[in-house]
Amino acid sequence: MNTRPVIPMARPRMGAEEKEAVWAALESGMLAQGPRVAELEARFAELVGVPHAVATSSGTTALHLALLGHGIGPGDEVITVPFTFIASANAVLYTGARPVFVDVDEASFTMNQSLIEAAITPHTRAILPVSLYGNPARLPEIADIAARHGLALVEDAAQSHGAAIGDRKSGSWGTGTFSFYPTKNMTTAEGGMITTADEAVAERVRLLREHGMKVRYHHDLLGYNFRMSDVHAAIGLAQLPKLPANNARRIEIADRYGRELRGVITPGMRPGVTHVFHQYTIRANRRDEFAERLRERGVGSAIFYPIPVHRQQPFVDLGYGAQSFPVTERLTAEVLSIPVHPDLTDAEVATVIETVNATAAELGPITAETPRTPETTTS
Image (cartoon, rainbow, N blue to C red; front, side, top):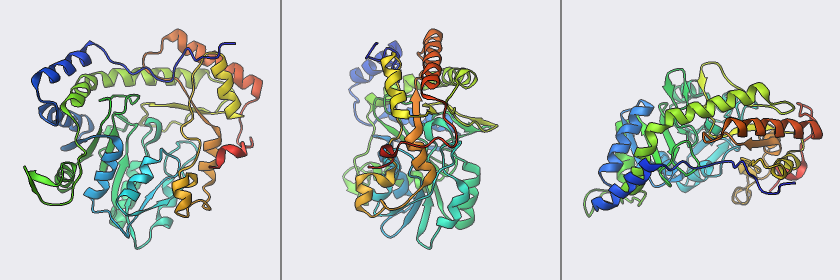
């Protein structure tokens, strides 16, 4: 059997346009934050449909600054989810605030909005839903809860570039944060973006991004060096026009998976929602063995994420380890992402489908009653 995946989980797309844009930035002599960053901000704000976008050095620094932009700090609480990459909750800790976890919805993998109000205390200052895998969280409902309780809404849209509910894009409810890591739907190699309609928040995060400095060497507050360079922005400017077509190809592949995969649970789809499939995540019986058999047969896969945030060691050390979130703990034992990137050929998609279906037939289909593997739910 083949022991090396021949169909990888990602193929970052770098064409002639990106290379030319980077070379032009290098030749310009403007390597740090400059006109290309400003242009990327303007164009990304237009994509999301908000007046302000602020580029940062990563998706994590975007989250950190977005929370600080809303005044989140020591003694505050931020409601978020334990089924996500750890940066979502780490960013809360960076501000001195404390994350308060609520479980996710089993079908969408995103925050279960029916659990939010029970988690609100006098210390709650914000809600931080995660639009996981390219699927927008239930943002209209969460925004309504936030408004009724006077809370900030900060969406972790790191994986949801171009995702939408109706005609409204991820990143346009409250404050949005995006990542431009190499495997995202669009990249700047490294980088992030904050989007908002709140001018005061935009102004504050711009100040925080650059050492608290409006006028050179005049520092108004304690800030950070979280800037994006013009070289990185040049890549983003070449990538941005390609995003709609790349997303469309992801959606096309996902649609075929949804029709043809057997013996696994495929992603839940909500009417009127544009899921952009940063990842196509199935739920599989005997997940770890399932992944190994895919690998042996030449199909790559990955687990996003195998350990809930509250069971990660830094959070165990803070006293979160005894908490239980049954849906999250079940999902971390079952989820498996399969290739969905836009460079997949139709033949490769057919191979993925054939391999997944054969493996599911061997290991047995997953059902709501399928027991999870205990070792995958602990740190």
